[in-house]
Length: 357
Image 1 (cartoon, rainbow, N blue to C red):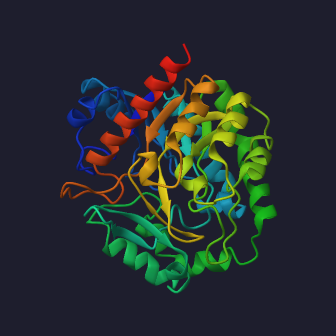
Image 2 (tube, rainbow, N blue to C red; image 1 turned 135 degrees about the vertical axis):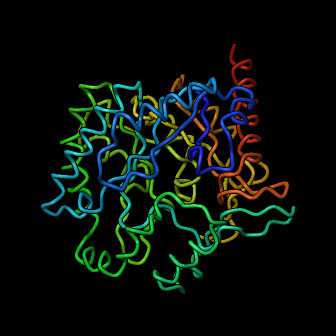
């Protein structure tokens, strides 16, 4: 496996490349150009600058998270072709600078969604939290405002203000959208871009819906084994693959993460792995926890063993962490707990590897 660490850029992150370089076993950075409006082309000069910044710090940049998909593509309206052409150009530009994997999602309007960004835990830390009834009780416009007001002043991926400013209009546009139409629009998108990925040797890795169920009546399709299986066969190419996120998929108690790792891993369709833990306190209520298995409801030993069993040699990263030790950071993306997560995942991998020699 190739361990990585997500980074938001020099002027948009409390974590520095120097700090990432000091995390044992973490030579890879997962980055993006966060100031490019969704749907616009990522220019070569901007990609080159990001690449040089990372490499000058003694790190590598081979994974992008994320090149976001414009809402018109998800909606399937006539203007989608313009944005798909821009996406193709971005893929080609990224390939010139050695990018191997692009993470993206196909969630209508909202990216990840939580009711609380700093839910207090018993040990004095705080974490992202989802309480189903709390979300249902809040108007989407108020929810967007609450997220913005509690982000510690940081921009949040998937919550771009310029896009969400049109929230009422977006909901109206999605009024007739269902899962089948959304699948059809994803298929159209993949049919256009996967040949470019094959040409450029760049793999697409779709991120699961987070959480993996419909919210505010919006369809969500990247939610379970059956839908993921359908998705990878929409365009049956090894370049059409998954970001298998244990925390997102694991929020549905019916999803067996180790089984999914083995099933899609044997297909060669897991191009990026997000490994994190969550703690349930209701059927659809959970908070994010330390990566340690005993701190959450998912067995990370079994998840990592599944990756080892399939001989996973792709990119992996710890995902959201708690905010600990009085750190002030972007919710879910502080340094300390994610660094602990890397140490834990590396320790599990080493132990599993030695057990199987």
